[in-house]
Length: 340
Image (tube, rainbow, N blue to C red; front, side, top):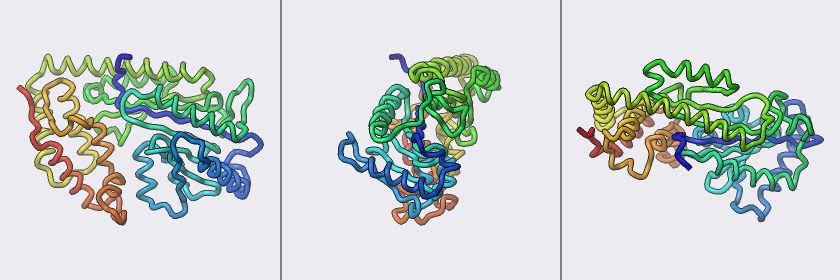
């Protein structure tokens, strides 16, 4: 299959148990009992990979934030992670995760870089089938799987495509693209505050169509957006080759020599370098086995605290984080150059 050009892919699958009220209206005791039952199912031995069940009451804030950064926990769930019946577990080596008694009783999540939507859906579908053998899901022949928000009833599937569109953003051509996506019923949102021209596209409203059709629709629309981005980049390179090389060269120079770097700045620099690599005018030997987007994810605050502070005592706003980030950038960009 031809690459769609997705920077990253994400899937969310929501389910609720029949006979138990939604989390926002159920008795706390009943929610705690449901959490215990779900966690008991997760530790059974017949899973292909093992689940790691976390105690949200004692889980450090930096660890919760790290899972949000990895796309394995929703920000909404993280904000009230210690509520009644709340549970969280990770499948295998961060292949997928489960939120228990958040907005819905069960929410399965999976996220990875690249064009991986079919694989992620296959993975979550397998986990969902296993859970359904132990729990009776709330299902209506007309509405489909019931959700805490009626407009989200249906397949319970949310599909997320992360796109890198800096050229469209810089030229002002992104706005009409976004308007077109919204008119077709999709949600668009900037990732990391819009740094680096990275955005997410997801489906919204009732998911009444078959899952594979919903995924295919996101794939088609994402490919169209990516093709427009590529076209604008090529136009830039054709009409302003000196300015393009200057823009990328300045990004590489700053990455090689900065000693203090906020996250948003690192994302912007890596975005420029990624464009240079794709246009074949930038050479970064250290990025041979890691994409610029992978490095962006690794440079997020909680990731750095987890990797470089074994005690995990450093605050997410600590100045040392910006210094460590700059050090990593200098190491990665040693030997990088703009090609003539």
